[in-house]
Image (tube, rainbow, N blue to C red; front, side, top):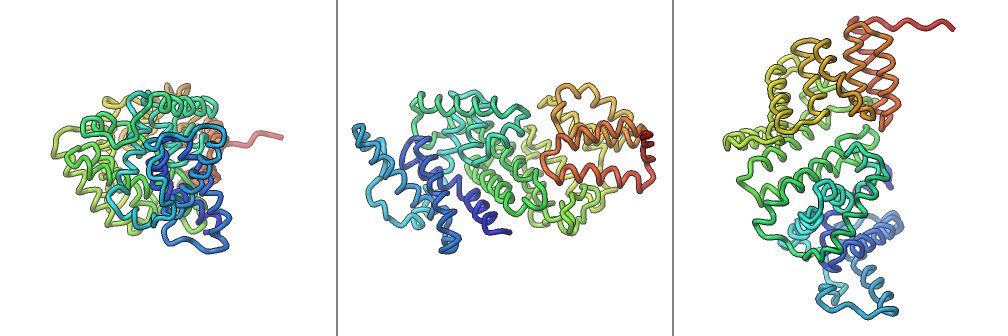
Length: 424
């Protein structure tokens, strides 16, 4: 990993802790975010020369806190200083932050940050978007891609959310048990989207983006400690563990994506799989099924199959059908179509997804699957059109290469013939 990539990775991993602590100190999202950004700039200048700090989060909190204090003092020349209770604990700016991070409030800071971003005064889409921006530091472009909307629309959504939090006078305290339960769904969705952003990467970015997956798992475990009897949080945590367990096998030595059915399953993390399977079994015993539990159960079927050909696609189809009822979505139907193609053939799967094209016209995976199904049906020219569209929508070089690999693999296996070339 390059020096800059390591610094970016360390900052991404430390962001929730640092932002949570800075928010506790300044009780204002914009002030905390500005202080953190200034600390990041100083890290980029300082760490290459002086080496990595013992605790990157502690370093960023200490530097960001001092930077924020300086900014408050500069503003004080033009305006009266805030009341003491508006800026908490500004004295002793050189206290040992690392030691303080070892205390119980280390976790409370993160939860306070999560729950403020997911405040019920905000619409659900704004809750998740602002949490992704503030907690995980994802760019507007990355968040917009996760929501399948344009960047300008997402920028407006985040701006409105931050303004609404400021105008609402949201108390900067960890909510009580009732409020935590009310906000749990939004927080869980935000954690899942953070994981997906880290998971959807190419091999070159994987080392730097892995902290997003690891942070999402850490936050899910933290939520599980708070909500120990909530089966959906068990399902969420299990889902993340079972998916991340496959990380070592997702790319080959040349950096190309390896399809799930072609992965070397001996590389999968057995420890993560065992933890995930135990959580799935524990969640299902509550007999209160929810979307995360169903998705975790699907991932568990893949994890339990010693070989790709042992996968129980019939059960996966049934689980996706249940998920469609719980959480209707064109993406869920698209995923179910994969199982249908394994059980009942590509023609039926293609018939399922064709009505989705208008809603998924900007979705890379739709055209990748459509092209694959068309090629299996020997409809080469139509497949080529779909694949060209998929490559145009690819977010990374790895996604584009994945499409080409899929075509080559089908041709090598003799499942399809190469489409005829047009005359020049």
